[in-house]
Structures are given as C-alpha cells and as structure tokens.
Length: 272
Image 1: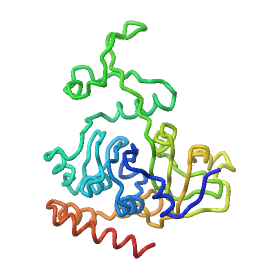
Image 2: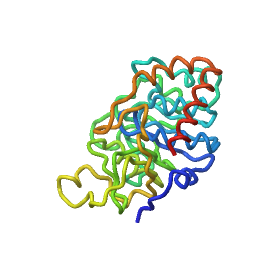
Image 3: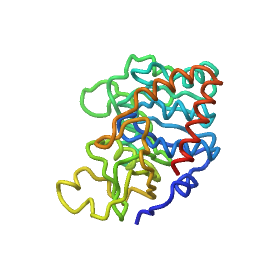
Image 4: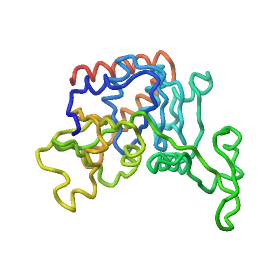
C-alpha cells in the first residue's frame, strides 16, 4: 500500500546521484517538492525530462543540483529561453544528453516492457546520432523496413510529479496525462505530491478509474497545496505567466537567480 507522508519525509527519499524523471510543464510539475529538494541540498541528479521541461529543470540547474540532463528541450515558453539551462550548457556545468520526444518515450516504454531497447524511426540522418553513441542504427530484423534506430531503455530511479488528488490507498488521478503513467511504469519508484487526499476510492467506477494511476505504481504521496505553482495544474488553477516572466528576467544573471531562488524557498517555508 502507498504511504501517505509529509513533504519532508517524501523529500528524504531522494538521494544524490539518482536519476529523476519529471514531466512537461502542463502535466503536473511538483514545484513545491522541487523547492524542498533544493533546500535539502541534493546534488548530482541525473534529470530526465519527459519529454521537455521548463522552470523546474532551470531551477534545479541553477541551484547546482544537476549532474546530467536528458531532454528534448528546456524552455520557458512565452517567457523565452531558460536562462540557467543556457548558462549551464555554455559553462559545461552538466552532461547534456540531447534527445527527441519519441526517443524518450520509446526508452521509457522499453523499461516498462522489460526489454533493453526499443526501435524507432525518424532519427536516421539526424545530427543527434553523432552525439548519442548509445543510439544504434541497425538493419530491421523483420520485413523490408530498412534501417531503424534502437534507443536504450530509460529506467529512472524516481518519477516525480504533482496531481490534483489521491485517495487513501494512494491511487492518483492523472486524467488524460498519460505521460505521467509512462514515467511511473518505467521508474523504480514513483513519488507524488497532490492538492488533497480524498476519502472516496478513485478506482470505484469505470468513469473515474480510466484516468487513475493505481497505487501499485506509487510508493509515497504527500499533500502540497498549490504544489505546481507558478506552473498550471489541470482543472485546479492556471499558470502564473507573470511569475514565470519575472523568473525569466531575474535568472538571466547569477545574482538575479540567487535572489529569486531565495524568495522561492522562503515562500515554500511560509506555506509549510
């Protein structure tokens, strides 16, 4: 059965050097947990963006917590480029593992299926093959498909995300955001923050169960109200575009980033 714990206990389950899968900005980003992780001083994270990230990855990079990053992109969307990501790439502050959205999902699927790799099409001829020696071009062993690229399985140590609610058993409502399920199926452990714990069983009806990640895949859940802010959480609250823009402006410099991060962490402490 899934443990329902405090945010502090959830944060303590992370360790240096782990690979952590995080979702795209509109799919339930655990921003409060990210602040708690930064405050805990965790280091050497191998960050896996499923399939891209934004402010969450940029904060972790700026805080010096990231040792390697596998992603299709890191961007703040309408607010522009992710400044700490750009600065980190230029300074070679972490190992960048360039990828594509299909390749990341294929790697997660391989892990889910218990196989060492997954073949995909569409990368043949790409410059990415020059920087990803772990991706292999092979002749298709079946049919007349020609060549395919095989990408290795991606098995994160931890999948981390935020969702609207969990029930007492630890079933998580993820709605149509199936990428969250892909992360959980592939990861060794899944840790989730939610807006609330509900007494009803989320698997009770066909209608509700269709959008639920079963507790079988979830190790621990913690309540963190407005835990995705300033990013959006579907059905709960919109993203705070002004706050993300403020971050983008401040984080262009190291001093500005440190000032923003200090306020961000202080806000989390006040909300706790």
